[in-house]
Image (cartoon, rainbow, N blue to C red; front, side, top):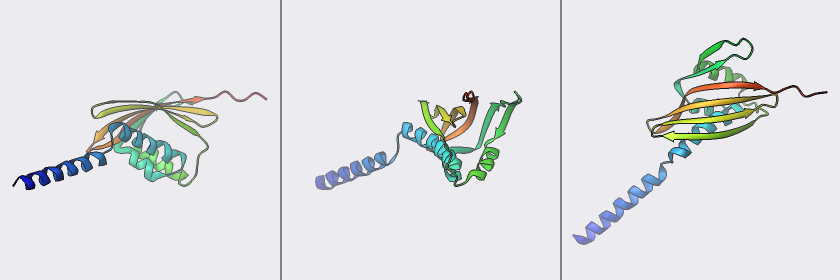
Length: 148
């Protein structure tokens, strides 16, 4: 019996170790969700964009042209993104910071498109073990035109 106990304990240890190493950390999960959003937009990859967001997510912002508050279901944003499938955007992206508290997280991102910079603030939740963006707010900063 002792030989069986030792073998059984070794087996349990291996299974536990393999299972725990297969799971990604929360930091990696948040970064993965945010990178799906950034890379999806940069490379016209709607699969990655869809993977980044929870289906009920929303996007809120103040329209730069009209000054009006906008509240857009993420499905509208994703439908507009279909026009850029396969097109690479000339932009630079950066994760400014992430912060995680239990099953909630925030990320601040910058997307520099040359003539503008988007300042994105993402709220994420860990839903069924996977990090998803549940809301996005942003501000578009237009850069001054280059002098001639």
